[in-house]
Image 1 (tube, helix red, strand yellow):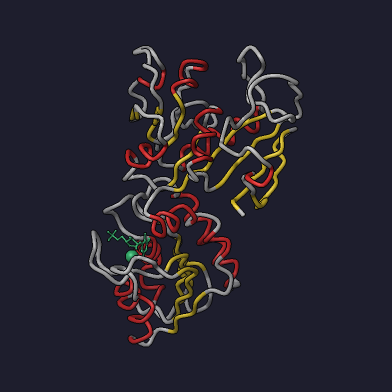
Image 2 (cartoon, rainbow, N blue to C red):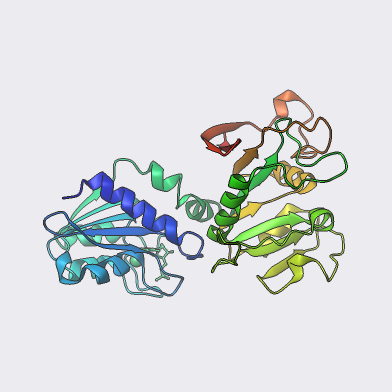
Length: 334
Ligand code: AOF
Ligand code: ZN
């Protein structure tokens, strides 16, 4: 018999596994327990048009779902969209109890909780939505709230905050554990943004890779932002993933080019980062800080328009993790 909070943790893990592959739909996780409290189904949302998390988990459970409990990270949908309502699927399967973490903010899909209650299912809203709201559903909820993608500024820097040495060389400031984490994380996002300056200086490939270096199944859209011409031989111009060129200096044009994207990572360099800070488009920072002192070279963020300490962009530390000798800091705006 599984404790409900362990079941919710399994549901969050299931949603984490599909993160990056579901946009514009949210990555949702669902767990089905049988009458005795045993796990009989686990599911994550399939790519848009495919079954929702509840349906994947119910299929695995089969008749063992009857009289059982569903634990879901998002309120079960209540509408005929690309797929039939999950509220109906849960009722038809004979589920007796539903626990869900977050209300569906999409008016057209919401109301599953009421439909389930009306059908005699005991519905409970989970007491601690934080692991879902701050975790796998963060970017999607942000997109629903603001109508634009969620931007994470990600960088690797020396202890003195520099992203390259004075001569421009930057391979490698962070250690192998940080780089492996970053390559894996790329397979869980919708798009990566870099400036034309970075393409000229580093010729990055910007693809998601598995641990063995092979290309991951899901690739983020590569976005190159700026006014400089990109050489045809640039690695971002190859066929490994889609590439969009945004010929502008205004970050809002990047927003306009990413209508279909939810979770976007900004990789710099400093000029691009500065422009996004100035435009109020940094929703999270993930900083890989390495035990290296450069003493000279460009700072990770260029001119962002804060001339005085009172104008500084202030953040709140959400988590700190050690990766080899590096420290990974995750921050959100105050
Ligand atoms: C759920 N479980 O796993 C997901 C839900 O167009 P559709 O039919 O795929 O519906 C998309 C909407 O359904 C989406 O905007 C969101 O409100 C909800 N997503 N709901 O019950 C899931 N991914
Ligand atoms: Zn659904």
